[in-house]
Length: 87
Image (tube, rainbow, N blue to C red):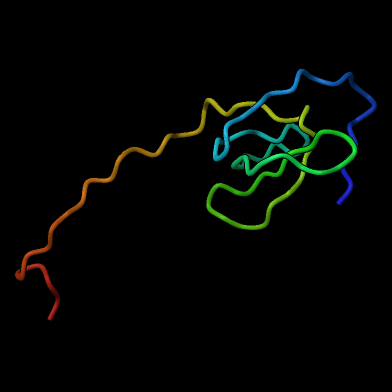
């Protein structure tokens, strides 16, 4: 898939996310998990929906960090007793 920067506005400073970080695709408004750099002529990155799905490619200048998305907290394991097991 070929991705070209939008010529109607100047390029933004490139944001360098960590692998697995949530970022916003400014071209679509979608939030995705940063999967790594792309391989096109212009700098691009691959994003994947946070809960899985198909990756998409976006110009590297068109992503920003996500600050308003809820963070997942630690999960406390629970132990089932015999009285909680369904017959």
